[in-house]
Image 1 (tube, helix red, strand yellow):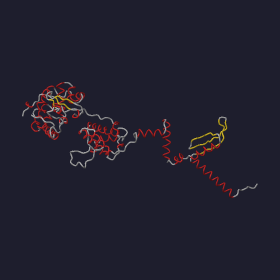
Image 2 (image 1 turned 30 degrees about the horizontal axis):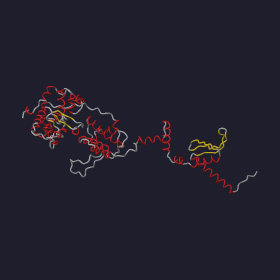
Image 3 (image 1 turned 90 degrees about the vertical axis):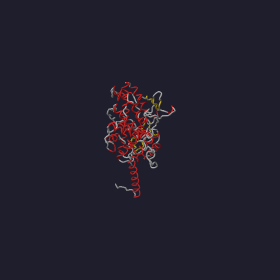
Image 4 (image 1 turned 60 degrees about the vertical axis):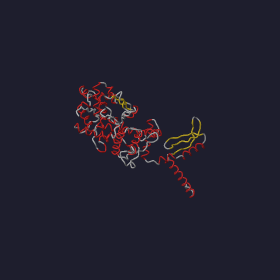
Length: 435
């Protein structure tokens, strides 16, 4: 039997149709589309069904007519956006997507839910701000101690805010010292979001950018300043949480206050009366009333009782809240020997001009007089608290007079001196001292 061959034109047409059909099929397979339309008995009723896989998922849809099934099938073939996007991903991205998808299904939420949660809780309500450490620390602004005010840095950042809200100068100076040390250690251009507990601990243990050996109390103080700074960064939406809270608290060595003996008190009083007479009122109030040196320099005398801090009738010194370290009003009783020492000035005038400089000069000479390499920290106030507690045996009285808590009085000043020493201390009067 002879084999009939198609005409050349027919063979070419058939080849072209076969090629076109194969290309479409390959394209469909590459895009994850493979679907057929056929009749199917569905619940006892003959209907048309479009059946196949789209992007690897089985899809089946029933229709009343073949035209409806064909139309739906064509729409599926045209919607290739997701397939093209998936094919455009790298193998690594696809693996990440698949792993994330599986994990989200296992934990019971969708990938979209995870992204939304991260946008809110992982990066702030909007998004975390970018801020370098130099920008965050900032500057306190113009310093009147220096003449070149035009070239000084403007008030900005954390330090600028603390100055604006009225933080005391001494506290602001401590904050500035600590934070600039931390900034120089880490590098000013470092982003604040990179502040980690490990970095903070390393900074503390290495003694800052100068590599000093800090005592435990110094480490504790510096970490508390950094905690305050990081709390501000959280409020500014720069970091999500405070890294300092993840650190273990430093064990601070017990505090043993240094108490001057009655004889040492006599020596410093004689020295002050003879060589530093201007600051004798400051010494008297610090030693016999326990008023802090910074507070004594804010006291004012005036003929008008309302403008004066001194009530000579009731033998009291009255502090407004703005003039105390704790920002709380306080009334301090003046002892008899304190009043006598104040009366060495026939006309007591306070505040004292240039008090800071004069007081520092006195402390330098007092240190030499007593033979100390360093002046014992706050020893005049500590002496007052110890001698008063031994005299009255009442923690509440000492706490009220000194402006601290009863717990501090109990912890620091209990049984520091003897009753005989306390009696001798409260009996130190100018006329009983040798000239």
